[in-house]
Length: 531
Image (cartoon, rainbow, N blue to C red; front, side, top):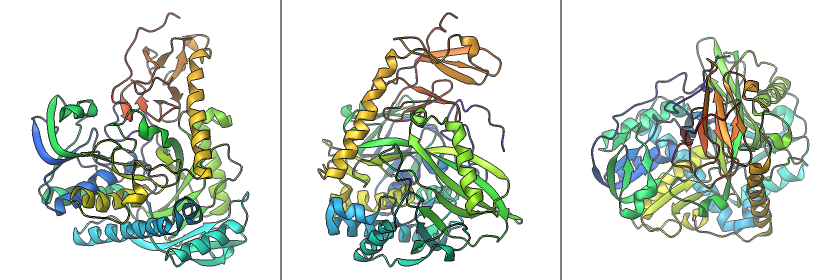
């Protein structure tokens, strides 16, 4: 296991823990913005959503500029497990109940088209990224009932996905699963950062421009430009592809909630496990509206070993204490499960967490930002960021070019879904968010700053909250603990060594630098409180 130093700048990745992706490929860096620029389309974010949108627009003949505040893939694409699937984590039976048979069919068509587009780009652009077609298997969580799989079998057949019910014991690789399982053919996987590097290179060959380490300030968009590194970018259209939209103050943040998800990676002997994708149906007894589930895949590593990548143990960002299980303790839960179901698993060589945005009505948001005809957003990926970000390239290109697309209604950011299950989720999530403002009245995390260990932090004071980080040398650094987005009190994440906002998911390094939106600015330095 690597010995991580705190991440103080977020340039390579948005957490302290490195991932098996960031450690096995050199992320692309381009020049920083150093002059004013005009373009047809500015894309903010160089993850899979931003680069796919940029690539598709460039293929369509548009002049496109990409702005990225870190390196290529330094956001959540570099912290994914990279399942490329039309097997959605919000089941088709649920999607059908919310959006009807047509909506569910469009969900299936769009995610299937995304898998095909990734494969086509890999072939056309000669990207060596370990892309592989393979089967996926959905099996029951111990808290769930077989009816879930029966309903999903019927719903997937309605939308044209040719699933097959199999016995859990017949699934390749995995052990200890009895009862039925649902097989999804023609899913896929790849190395996400190898793919992004190839996609970036292809985009540049098409005449696109990428500026890395270039922080975009969208507050100036109402004046017709984006301020970035002190320069002006003047686009006709803007696409915000920053996981959580940094252009929107409130509207979209009532429609989705941030969750942290955890990953461990074990070495296994080369070829010991037949490659596949595995998911369970989720913990039906979870305290969270969005039920966490286990998800697993393999990945080529070296001549001796493959990697076995297992994710899960999700919770709302900044609210791990609701389950009385700290962020750093969740990896043990994953390891126990992994060794039970994959006895081939050897040494744990990587661990990290990432952030996903969970929409209240299951489907992501791709399209015009509500109330703004010149701004498009991509967000609400849930656990399907690879396909969601890819289909955004197809859909947004059509929208900007004035071409009708049958998926537009399903992914419309301005939609309102008034079905009971989505209203219930909305109420639960908003109650969870609003209740965080009580944190102003809570006592300090520690009675004395001396109780803060080197390399850790605490939130102190009442009602004026201060985030105090103690560096490895023992010196204290203090920042306002109030998130500059909507004023929630941030919480210390001792696993990724970051300050996380429990309301809308903004995240800041131990030195207060913003690494996740929707916040646009850093935590303001303040005087260290008297001890």
